[in-house]
Length: 102
Image (cartoon, rainbow, N blue to C red; front, side, top):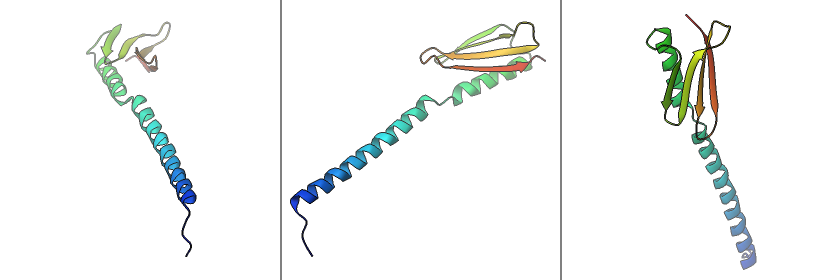
């Protein structure tokens, strides 16, 4: 068996470190994006507001603040539909939902 030279060992070590660093950056990016785009809480709140409206617990026009979200609900003009809109005041993202009046 031949022993590896110092240069071969250093190059192999650098290559392994680079591969682990790139993998780490990719995983970090994936996890941070999944946290930023988590809309589970606001979707649950929107569904609760829709439920309350359908069961005559709230009246229109409706406006509410929920965490960083501004939620508004009002009838759409010249239709029998209700528009519910949630806008994140930090990121500017918007979620819209339209459903029919009862």
